[in-house]
Length: 362
Image (cartoon, rainbow, N blue to C red; front, side, top):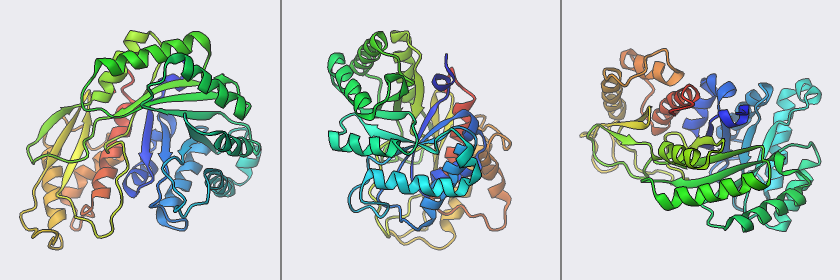
């Protein structure tokens, strides 16, 4: 099995919590391939895009350039007028940070992601971006229902337009949110993947999915199956092919529309364990509607952290940056744990290390 196929794929949003986890979890650079989805909510001069650049710099310097997906961006984005403009600007900032290392390195600073349904104009723009430096490209197939013959034609069209060989294309079969394992999904993926393998060689093939629900239900501690793991295993076993595992970490696959002044959530955490996710939450009885007394969110998250630390599923304070913070925040005089982005950061850090060490059972 190639190194690419052994390396798990983690799809993250360009949001504070996930990026904070990536920058503080060293294992991600050597053992996980990260795909960053840029969102309209990112300001061109803000802290989030700086963290995106910082993480891309760190990853490129270690020889594992980040996959950058501009699919969710609209014309309203502050990052650029087109995907090509965004990629060029981002690469310029990364190269400036890398300095001489970038000039001497044959490795690209980032890898662009294109949707399977990219039109000719979009492919021409990516081709022009590739003229700066040749590199592989990621093709993202979102819940595709195409027959294998049509899928082959589409991938050949993309490779030809980009002047790349199919062995320079990374394929991501993105199944999005999966609530349960469905036979028809497995069968369709197996048909496509085996059909492609019989015809061409690709840089890697991944099955990407996530089972974190959009809405959290109740406050009872429970384990939830990670259906994305079951889906990947089923496709891998039925196809007999080498398939990369991919997931969305501890958040829902689809980006949530940002709303300024939105409701502060009750404290919770999604904690990854083999084949499942442990859910722990607390209701904040001090809140009145969307009015939350200062410090109360922190107090009730500390109860979440304390329950987790005393459960057998807790991996230990030394497991990851996130686990260390979950353990120590309970004893700090002024813990900074009053926002969902912090909870997501801790959980994502733990998740990254978990999947990086669990290639057979993520």
